[in-house]
Image 1 (cartoon, rainbow, N blue to C red):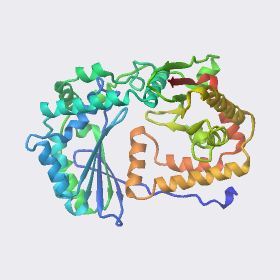
Image 2: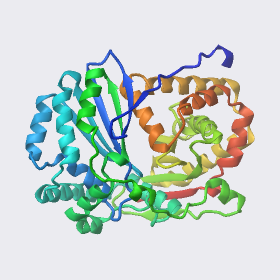
Image 3: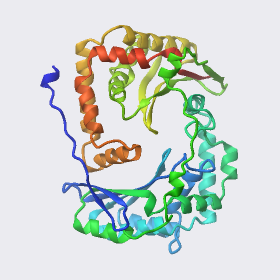
Image 4: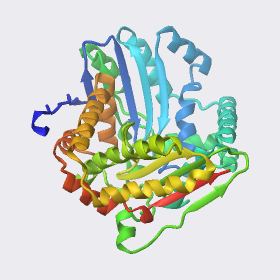
Length: 428
């Protein structure tokens, strides 16, 4: 069966460098009339001195420049049919512009102004802070949000950037000066890279070079080289090897109508061979609608509408998590069902027909996920932000095609130890 499968291949970006030394990755497609410009700044939640500092600095870029108000910027982007997305991760801040190629000169000029000349107006800052505080107050009452915060806080520790979450006091203690400080410390040509995808011709490259090819912002990357360090939490494998056991974390909230269950722990390095094989094992366990957890806990038992397992890669290590919402009086049955499915994978070989089905599913998902220039841009940014080699996706494909049932059982014995993972229950 494996020999009949065709190995998919994905186009890699071409690389160039702006006159100021900024790396540029290009995914060109003549099938697009649209263009996407990604500017990735090497600073995120890890680098901030205050919670919300990286997020609000990023969000305020579109709220006015030294020459244009927020409303004028929004009107001009709308006029050209452009769209701006702003987001922050653990180590990076992202500025993404979608625009029609024929308007790239005008929209790229607006993007340059927002990035190089942000005003961080006080009145807009207050609006953004108030809106985000309101969203926090609403989402903080949700069981799934509380469970996620408890899981990451328990595994990483509440002082670690991945385990520390903003509370109401953090919204009230952040100020405009904090945003200016973060911007001047980290935003600059010495601490970013660009990714261009879509219809990227010579004219587009010339315009981008004119807009962003001169030195701007922070003058050195010394601030990045002095990146803060935090104690690394133990992985699931290390906890098992040391004979440790994690105590479940349980919280009760009377306003909830169902229980939120989260089980997880820190895994292997993302650039390891174990990671690629673990993706296959994770898919078998709970990574798609036909997975084992869905079949037993949802379809056979009817304990939940949905249950899934996933590998998160916000840092250089993978984080494994199982997520489910269930009626409160079936919570323990769900936990026992998860434990038994992990144990089955540790003791029994995955049947070849099931493994073949999962291979087909995963290859199909890869092809869908990396179809088109914008999807390939996402892949490029993923590799660059995690410092992964260009053949990382090819290695993932090889693992899907070649990982044997025996190797999957060994992976389960090494990594899928229920008692070594953190269990979190947020219940009525």
